[in-house]
Length: 313
Image 1 (cartoon, one colour):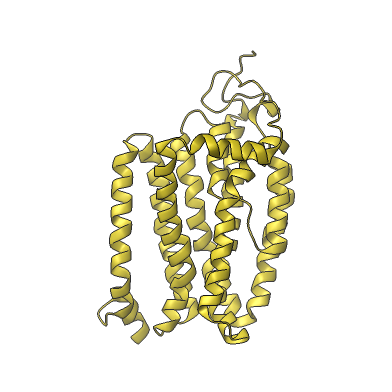
Image 2 (cartoon, one colour; image 1 turned 90 degrees about the vertical axis):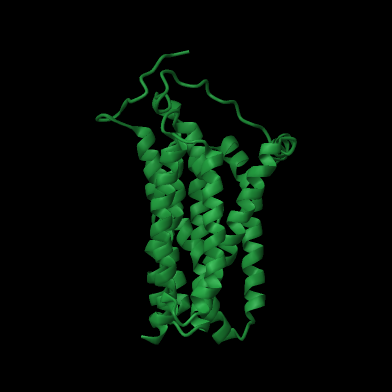
């Protein structure tokens, strides 16, 4: 096995940080795509006469597929390479305004390219979802209100597809492709052989994971996180604000503001996870999440709440 320095780079910068920056932008773009349904609910109700339950059901199917594809996406990346898989997925995302890239991509890249500072990298890449909300939500709401939802979708598509050439240029499958060790390691890992049929590999991994208590604990925590964040807040906060007298742009701006705090919190959480017991951190994260969800009905319905004061102003 060849010993390699872990910080060979452009200048003194290890290429793993270039990869992390690329993944951050990709995650930011796909977060913008996933935030689009919250902006589209009210226009779809007005134009097509669809009920909110019907639209929510379609969004729910999308979220179900988004979660179910994770194990298979990781297996396909192992088999065919992350660069090709991501490029194709991002192109399909732009064309179909769907999604093949998610939080599992951040974990995949952090594990493959980093041996040190994995918590910080995971925190920043996870926070890119919040950054996507912050960047895209007010813009998408403004475009929808002033140019129509079709124009908004076309602009979003153009932005996502426009990043594909940059991804093809900068992305690499693994550090060994550049003659590097992962960041923080002193030697390169041996090249992994092709994993065979990616579908079989995904089911095999799920079967192994299902025998672990930790797997179910993590799966349950991600279920709660996804149901409250994607299923409830990201999808329904803007329509709820419209129902309570706020404009769609104001609702999107409020949701984007939560994205700012989520970005700061996600980045800080990654830093803390390298230094504190994650069980202690998760206790506080989910406890505060629960309290905030309990307060939400009062924030929308109370005449003394900031949201209602903004509506009456």
